[in-house]
Image (cartoon, rainbow, N blue to C red; front, top):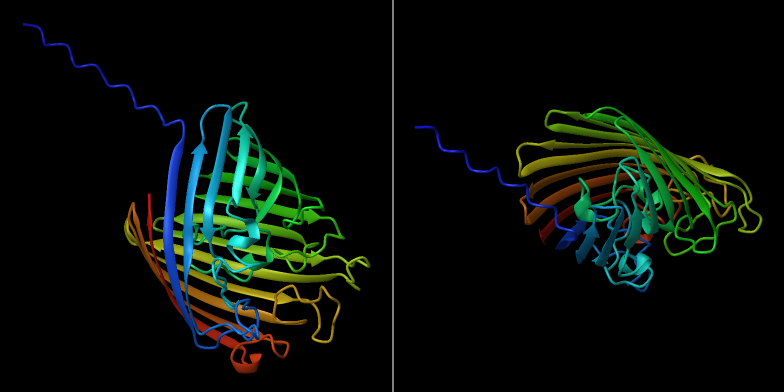
Length: 359
């Protein structure tokens, strides 16, 4: 008797035309030397020693197949940054109020496997750290991230093949609205385990400040490398920033800053990991330089800082629990811009926790 015919192989389930994902999370941080300035919810601008805030309440709806695609992210969010005052999630001129309740929204035309054209409210190409806390190795963003653009309104053309990628974007540079900038990327992926990228943004030299960037005419050049070594991921990058002179803005001279960052993450298993970040950033200006663009770092002309961050994390498909320790040491701090009472101290340590649920 012949063997019975094998059952037919089931067809793979088609990808859903539209996907919906979301997250809700809170963080709490305690600082030993709160920032003397930068808090928008206190009378004198001094930060509180303890902050508990909603870090994310976001939903993303995306269609990522076919020629016509789209993605939009809506909700509330907070941008905690090491060494910078933490503001409430719904504080005017901070966090959710910077990019609104629709921080990312774009449409995309994909004519083939190599090309894509996107238009709308786009996340920046620069940096190894992403926009929202849950997208990153650490809860807090770094001081180098704090120099970069976050979101721009623009049009992006991107190309990719097996080993090479490139993108060019025309946008409103540092969310300036009226001024224009070119942002671009060149990438090389020799293997699936490593990649090298050069990214830049060149805004108009007279781009004025806005709520998202105190100095918004910054030309930035970013060199990023990614390496996967078994369970260890390394993401070093360097950022060079130059703010040109502008009589229209009161910038008497050209100023620059440089930052170098090493991000790393070790995955013990599918749930537990330990992330870390070390960074050094500094202004090239002298402490006696008072051009309005002489302080790109944030602690005054001629200032510099190093930061250390460790973030143990537990994650499942629906749960995020992360602790964090961070330490900042600043040098040549302008009086009043430092930490502790009167802003006279030059170091700060924070302990934090973030707990969230995602779907």
